[in-house]
Image 1 (spheres, rainbow, N blue to C red):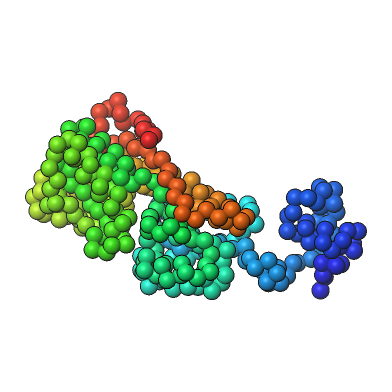
Image 2 (cartoon, rainbow, N blue to C red; image 1 turned 120 degrees about the vertical axis):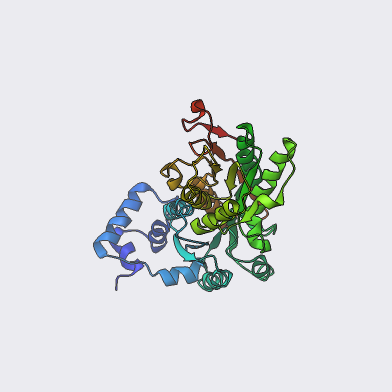
Length: 348
């Protein structure tokens, strides 16, 4: 088996210099680097990754837990996590909790056992009580995307969900709708509900600004799925609530709601307007096209990796919270005047 000593001998450098090239150290000259790389190629040298991990106490891996890999909101986040991680020599281990706390907890334990250098949680995939157990122990940095657990030892990357809910609701109010129903995420679980809480508060804030009383009877609970939005919208229609518009707390539920409206023989937006949240790719292709709040999905993923990389470089960013901007994307489903139906964007 070819060893590092063989590579050093063939390229005419010290073993330490050959090691520095393999570990991408900046102090090695480009001429020397190329000579060592050529020797590695000719000798077909394969570094002993396990030995390197034991020596450096690092695995060059990042664990990622996603709540639902089939939800089109998450792939762009994951792709950008993987791309930036790969650029800096890291691999990712991707786990899908399938919206199940127990699976999320099991995945979390697996990643800890594998000694990953950091863990990125997307949404509320692990309950807060489980995370708190590990905070008094030596653990990898945890970064959470789009969920604020309120734990100082955990870094957070989110958008301003209150503003997002406010913008979606205000847009409908500005268009003259004053009976706006909402389809939320689960309301009977504290951790899950936190994912809906900001949007819910933004909705109520807009109503208050327009001096419209909050009506709990036009609040329906969904589960962030197509079927959840469809079933919640069916409840609106069967109860004769006569809502003029719907704000769904994600695009999948908005698209499900649109199907229920069409099935009833009603028109969008002439009879009921619809606004979603996330701006998944499908929002541009349904008919009518869906007005929604766009989240910076690529930036959410990259920011989480940057925080982890800073931590591994001995620049810890505990207690950090990054809040990213979002956009209102106006399309056909909200019934905006024709002059606003050209994919206009407002950035906040």
